[in-house]
Length: 420
Ligand code: EPZ
Image 1 (cartoon, rainbow, N blue to C red):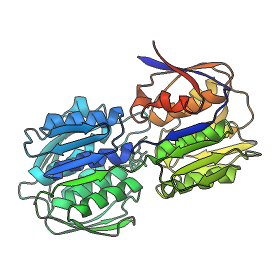
Image 2 (tube, rainbow, N blue to C red):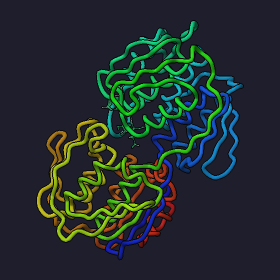
Image 3 (tube, rainbow, N blue to C red):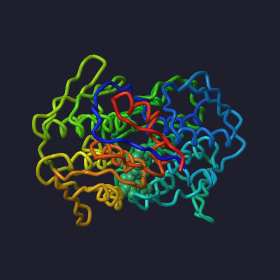
Image 4 (cartoon, rainbow, N blue to C red):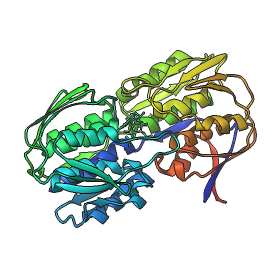
């Protein structure tokens, strides 16, 4: 297994180009099952995208790689409609093939994803939504076995909780259903918006895009015409590298970024004391004279994203005073705390609330990545820790951060990828 070795306290500064968004690429790839042909640009070269491409290939999709970050997918010759456990356990977002497979082929078996480090991650809301559209679903031997021999019917569905992939699964099912589907309490993330825009470009009528109520007029089973789409920039990757500038209190400039997707993150950075410079094609964080402790609660978009919680916890170690972070979306998204305490961070936990006292000196140590975003918080902490920090199990990082060493080196980080 690989690990990263980082020497702290280096002079940080420079520019980074942001990659396509993993969490937009995944639903778009799953949506290719609804199309004659779908061409996708700006796919990030990350493990989760490769895993989903392998699943699509296993199902029978014809996939041509035209160039780096580009694929052309044809789903004419699907031979399987079963997403097996060995693939789904590696990448829980494989659940996103449930809606499109059911809508297009009238049946599918998708392994229950199971939990992960940050929580139980149930998919009950996905299943209930499909049943409301007329699917018969049983859970057998750890698989969701779904069938809709007469096709899916439009329905009025209210999600008990806001679910990103639940909304995406339902959108894809509704796109090929007969009649109108109304989704209440829909997720509004930019990745959900891009999926809506893709379906609209294929001729599906959708009202309320970007709001919490979506109205979808389905094609009645007709396969969607060929389309070509470019994945939006990754707002969480962008936020992570802004935090690299923030924790080192240095200027870092990002290109290929959509600042409007980062508003909650930019507001919080300005509240702490940083300058933010938005130009035509770039976004920069500028050093703060004084970095104030802050309070933060994670909520659904456009609120502060849970996927940035760990990174801001690392930043809090450098802010004067006691910062407070409350994690409201996942029940176990503080796995980075014990690893950061090994570096000398002063963090106390009470249930879903963490208190971080700034000003403690961090010292390099061996630490272990536990999930994708927790790993990035350990990298950020290593930037300001004295001496070397070794971050183990970085396969978590490779799931969602493209070319991470190259991008870190571009802003002056002394980092090596080594073998255990
Ligand atoms: C998406 O996960 C993202 N993944 C996650 O990013 C992100 O943290 C999360 O949304 C929240 O923003 C992708 O888009 C691939 P949810 P998702 O369904 O859709 C509960 C990363 O680091 N829930 O919005 O799985 C659930 O337990 C990843 O890139 C149910 O109870 O999250 C959670 O408490 C991590 N039943 C809340 O809803 C369900 O059927 C939000 O989960 C579905 C969800």
